Length: 242
Image 1 (cartoon, rainbow, N blue to C red):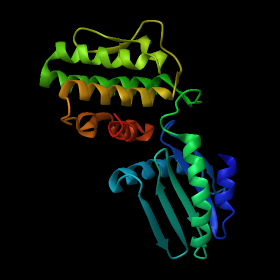
Image 2: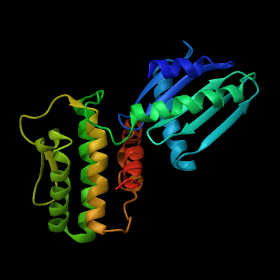
Image 3: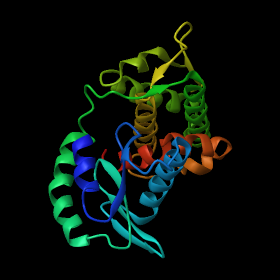
C-alpha cells in the first residue's frame, strides 16, 4: 500500500493521497502535515457520503482557485488525490492505470481472511447493537417478533464461520440482540462489517427481493455515530453484492 501511495504522490502537482478501505473501513494516506487525525476522519466520512450520492465506479474532478481534487470510487476503496493547479492529469492517469489494479488486488472486498481490522471499543460495539435492535424492532413491527427472531438467528449462523465473534451474540425470542455474559470488552473493527452483513442478510430473509429498510431513518437517533463508523456505507455496499 505504501508503495502505491508513493507512486501516486510522485506525479507532478500531487500533494496528497488518501485511500479509504471499504473492507476494513480504515484509511491509508500520504497527506500534508496540516491534515490532523480528526480532519482525515472527517474527510473519509465525506468520501463515503459522496460515494453514496454519485454511485459506484465514479470519478469526480473538483477545481479550486488554489488547487484540484480527484475522487475515485473503486470496488474496494475510495481514493482522494489532492493537487496543485499544475497537476499533470495525463501522467496521473498513466500512473493510476498501473496502481489501481494493484490496489484492487490488495484490498479486494471479497478477501477477508487475514485482514487486520482496527480495534473497536465496547462503546462503539454497544452502538452497533443498538442499531441492530432498532432494525430488529422495525422488522418485528412488519412481520412479527417470531419470524424476525428466526431470520436474525439464521443470518447470524451464516456469519459465524467468517466472523467467529458472532457466536458471542444472543438473539432472544423477542428478537432482542445482546452480548453473552462475560464476553464484553474490546472488539475488532471487523464487527462493523459483520453487523452490516447481518442487517443486509436479515432484510433479504425477511422481505425477499423487496428492499424496505431505510437504515438512516430507522436508526436516526444514533445516525451520526453509525455514519462515523462507516456502517451505512458498508450496508449499502454489501447489499449490492448479496
